[in-house]
Each structure stands twice: as C-alpha cells, then as structure tokens.
Image 1 (spheres, rainbow, N blue to C red):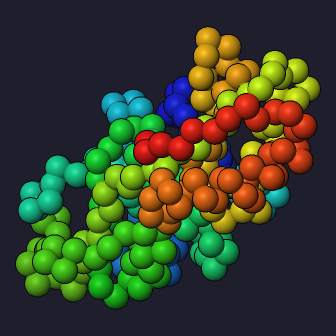
Image 2 (image 1 turned 30 degrees about the horizontal axis):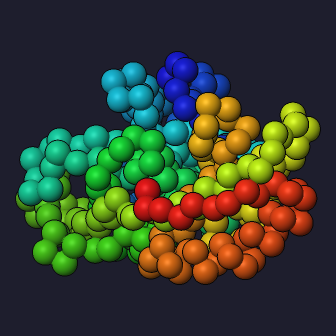
Length: 275
C-alpha cells in the first residue's frame, strides 16, 4: 500500500509499510469504542479504509508516516505508530506529530513506548526534524503518559482547542507535548585490522544484543571512517550522558571491555563526539 518505504525495528517490534491485508484488522480497531474513547466517533469500514488511504498518501508525499505495527509471534497487525505532518490552524502548526493507535489486546505491554522511541530516533537521526509534537485530550492519561515516557514535555502554555471540533465540544480541548532534537553523543570504534565477513556478521549480532542488555545504548550504526566500511564502527548512545566526558568515561571501561572480549585486537582507538 505504501510502496518502498523504510521499515523500522526494535527488539520486539517491526514498524513496516502497510499491506492490503492490514485493512480488516485496522477496521476492527477503529470500530472498537474503547480504543476510540477519546475520539469523536468510531469509524465504519469505509471511514477506516479512507484513513488508511490518507496514511498511504502521507508516505508517498513525505517518505515516512504512520507505520503499521507488527509484533512477531503475537500479531501481524497491532495498530500504527509514526509521524504525521499537521497544518490545521493552531499556534504550533505546521508541525510533525508523533502518534499511535493500538488494538486493545496489545495494550499494557509497552509496545507504544518501545515503538515511539524508535520513531523519534528516525525523526531526528534520519528525517532530520528539529522538533516533534504530540497532543491529546486531558482525560487520555494513557496517551500522555506515553508522551512523558518517551521524553516529551508538556507545553504549559500550549493547550488549544482542536479546530476540527465545534467550540464547547467535550473533546475539543487538547494538551500539547513537545520534544526537540536531542544532542546525541557518538562513540566511534576504529578497527585495528581487516574484519572478515563472519566477524562482520558477528559484530552486527553483538551490537543488536547490546540494545536489549545495556540501557545506555539507544541505537547503533556502522560508520565508515575510511574508504573501507569494515574499518569503522559507531554507536549512538542515550542522551542521558550529559557530556562527552561522561560518555568517554563509560567507553573507557564497560563498553570497551565488552568489545575487547567479543573481538580480540579489534579496537585501534575510539572517538567521542557530538552528533
């Protein structure tokens, strides 16, 4: 449905382009009055399909959007999490919103938080956005709790009435959350020697494992420090490291030791910088 657009992954989840066979499950989600409690109305099948069409148009125009969320081993379609350009009349628009809508049986597992964190990484590191917003009605505590858990902060002066709803409507008033592009601290490990194809595959597995076992690791990427890709390795770390000095101290001990144990003689030197 959305063509050749990026697929995002987390340790438990896949955020992927939409498929035609997602539409029945999406319609069931949009027809659930509990899921749609904080929206003006549930959607019938035609309305749900029309929404899916607008999501596809957004991907075609911007190259990203509201990804279909898959939970391998549990469900092929859990709902959506992603980004949407908003240009309705408001004091903070035009803006890019992060949003989510999950089937009720997928609530309570942390899927929205896990997927939204990956989407924010995409927004800042790949899409190059400077800010992302989110908004909901004050009564939707689960949603604004997700916003806070992914690092967003409420704009105390940002409350607004959504112009799509008539004045005085019970769902018109919204709270606004924002998050700006964080300063990332990057550690690049430069290889001391040529890396074999088998070691290269093992290095990918090692880095992926660190995402699930080390809370300091936000994401990883391979960085070419020379013309040969096999001679560069980089990790983008949590912005909780307040300075490059703090990251450097972390790198000198636990992280460096883990890499050294994984691959004897791999590291020539390390570089710590802002990203």
